[in-house]
Structure formats: structure tokens, C-alpha cells
Length: 117
Image (tube, rainbow, N blue to C red):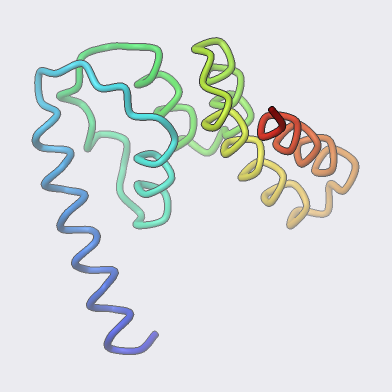
């Protein structure tokens, strides 16, 4: 990884840590962006321990724990179609990379369905 990319990743991680500290004692409708960022930057779900319990936090925990399919179910129950679709897309990528083509295609179809008006 180049020096520039390392700097960007380090800075993104610092900003994410700062954001997570600011959710302490608050109810956060976090959507899928925050858990995706936590996963991409290798941050643990414990970074959100200060957030008040919610269905959003449950979905984030599922996502960061490596279960985007469960996160998609939770986002769907919340009624957040874009977050549901994002979680299905991550699940599709994981499954296709693991050689589970049929299930991966099903997840991809669910992602596309979630993006269709």
C-alpha cells in the first residue's frame, strides 16, 4: 500500500474513532455506512458500545460480526431499503468469493430488488 493510501486509511480510522466516541449515550440511526466503514477499517463493533440500544445498532452489530445477511433482514424490518440493499450486496460479494454462486446470486438479486423503486 502506498504512503498516500496508508495516510488516508489512518486518517479515516481516526475520524471514525472520533465519530464513535460522539455517539456515547445517544440513539443513532446509523444505516449501513457506519458498519461498512467499521469493517473496511478493521474497527470492532465495541467502538459503538456507548450508543443506546436500537434496531439500527442490532443491524450494525450483525454486519460487523460478519453476518450481512442478518443485517439485511434487520434493515428490512426497519424499512430502510437502501441499507437492506447494501447489506445484501456485501453478502453477495462474500458468498461469490467463497464459491457459493447460487446463494451469492440470490443475494445480488435481493440487493438489486432493494434498489428498484
